Length: 173
Image (cartoon, rainbow, N blue to C red):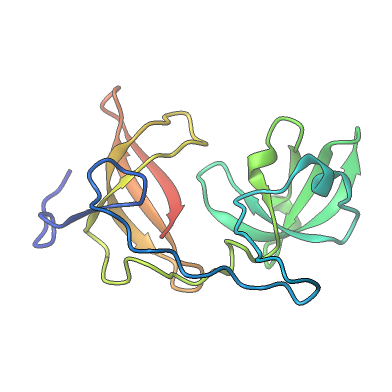
């Protein structure tokens, strides 16, 4: 890992053991249809995915953890969805089976268009604790911020694994 003038800065994401107590969470937004607060959920339920039809929009997480706005291009075998990423050519379309990859499907814009709402002072070269649960190397790691997507609040980080190889993954701040 290369050192930089900012290399000594490190901040832990919530749920990390090295983070001091969290401030209270702001109240959840109210739905217009009822009085119940709308809770943030990182992915759809099986029933929500069952209801997706051609042309429906949703968020989809790629194999590097980055979440993109997407659309159902086609379906087969009940749970297999042909994913088209908005703004990308069809050659980047992929098949994704929500029966085995439910964590990749989410409410449209919930992450792909969600603004950065915490840790706004962090920048490229800073270090954070991450737990890339949906990767081949889950578990808490110290990671360096390599890139920031200003439109979604997602950051690309790199970290070293047990095999001494560097991995790149995307997380939302």
